[in-house]
Amino acid sequence: MLRYVGVRLLMIPLTAWILVTVVFFLMRVIGDPITAALGGRMSPEQIDARKEAAGLNRPILTQYWEYLSGLMRGDFGRSQDNRQISEVIMTYGAATLELVIWALIVAFLVGIPLGRYAATHRDSAADAGLRMFAILAYAAPVFFVGLLLKLVFSIKLGWLPVAGRASTNVELRLQHVEPKTNIMVVDAILYGNNDYLIDVLKHAVLPSITLGLLTAGVFLRLVRINLIQTLRSGYVEAARARGLSSRVVTGRHAFRNSMIPIVTVMGMYIAMHFGGAVLTETTFEWKGLGYQLAEYLKARDFIAVQGIVAFIAVMIAVASFLVDMVVAMIDPRVRF
Image (cartoon, rainbow, N blue to C red):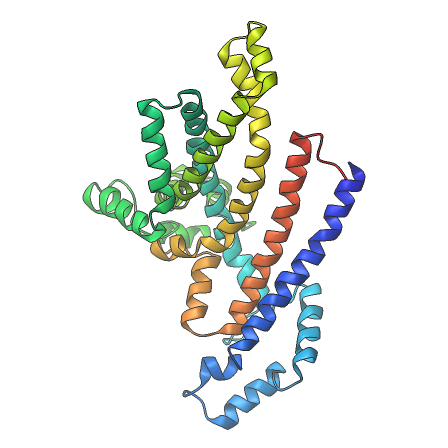
């Protein structure tokens, strides 16, 4: 096990390096970031001065080495408004992390129990309905689901807020909490006001469901397919032959083993949430990393985009390692 963990740990920097390298050179394919962002708004002399200050007039390999050196120090570069990207990541990344956690809770609570139910009631009307739900949840565009939920629960029924992470007055009050985490739920708890906590939770409901249903549909289908296959295995039939109840056979013998391939796919979807939250955050004006990335794209601030995408690439590499560790704990056969 220690050897397996060691090898996987060594693969984290390698994977991150490959992803960061691809991002760096792809961003350079579009041309000079300064000219792309400020062309037509500044004189050629001013643009040249900006390029000189940013080091973009140096050879591409020199820029690449300086960029890698900065990443090793935690420096993801500066945006066009001279803001440290690492500061942007710390501020807005917490919001995205909060949204991803809520969405995963929705995905696990909806996808896994419904997938298990569909597998144990195969070919029934409930199974057919759940399969249709899974397809719709996965296929429906995130922004469409978000707009639909807003129309129903915010505008028509008036139960939940339309957008934002909290009401304006609550958000202003939580700016002064110490220590500030930028995770609204935690900040509201630290502030000690239950009304603020309820307000924050209400704002989190619709974005969490919107992003969570996408993954819930995938989880449902994966759990159903793998559990059906596992229930056909010889050792499951042997457990039934010993007189064990269907509940014990499914829960103790089949379900855990069916989760091995599912965990791998789940981990990749968790990592994808960090990059895929852009549409959800934009739809609900949830000011997280995805929302800020969209703003930088609209402003054509490709240096900032490069820094945020590089950070997401590193997070995907770390998430891949964590998934491998979970799979190794579930399946003792996973060893080098």
